[in-house]
Length: 307
Ligand SMILES: Nc1nc2c(ncn2[C@@H]2O[C@H](COP(=O)(O)OP(=O)(O)OP(=O)(O)O)[C@@H](O)[C@H]2O)c(=O)[nH]1
Ligand SMILES: [Mg+2]
Image 1: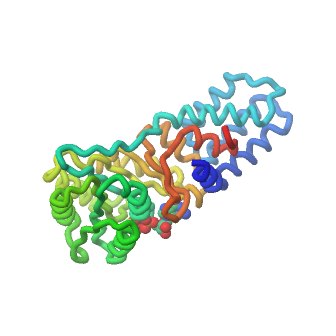
Image 2: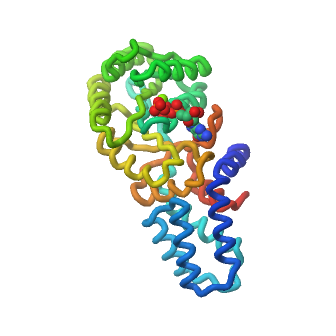
């Protein structure tokens, strides 16, 4: 846990340094209250916190009426608290349930390169001691995609169901799920090809995959997870909207927080749609993924440690 907090702090460094330096600049100089609020608003917006969450934070901040002697630590603390409150509804556990020997089906979707395949590998590595897992290589566009999933499979000792190159992804999912039921798997991860949210044909294919999954397991996918690359910033909001319509996503995973100064995007996402953020990724290695905790995230984002 302490290790993860350290990793999270390091991962969020680009985002937190930007916010922290900005706050130091704003509050270490004597200004009128309205100038301060204006600059704070601008800082939050450039940190990708989004207009709705920024407005809420500014309203709360001004209603707190921190007295003129408040030091930067108290100010950061108050802001972290407000950010934590906004993030809190997104902090949920992914409850993995198995009914009547039917596997728990996790469908991974997202735009190209968001981190879907890597996240499946990292997550499976964490869950494999408790569950029997299989992967379905539903990214049938690229041979390299299947190989990538197989590498993770080998690394974690997990069976991979794959088809011929270029085969129909929905048909492959149909067969792969039947196999998973036969093998009595507890969890099946379905990897899918990256698709930009404005490509209607690819979004249609995703709907077809879901229809086919439901033919075998009517209440599946039990988790329909959108993987979001934090470096995309505000575009994440439109990705969520469109994948919600097409794939009925019910949870998010945010990756590449380490490569981005846009860590505030989770605050914007929380305010806009409050979908659960189950996991966050802060690096390429197998253990660079952990559950999302609103308090930890908010406080690390403001470079407040150990509280
Ligand atoms: N720095 C960093 N890199 C990550 C993280 N998650 C994934 N990556 C890297 O991002 C790149 C793309 O990851 P993939 O898992 O292949 O992404 P994908 O969504 O499956 O990509 P497509 O299948 O091509 O759509 C890889 O080089 C990963 O190692 C993360 O949290 N931090
Ligand atoms: Mg992939």
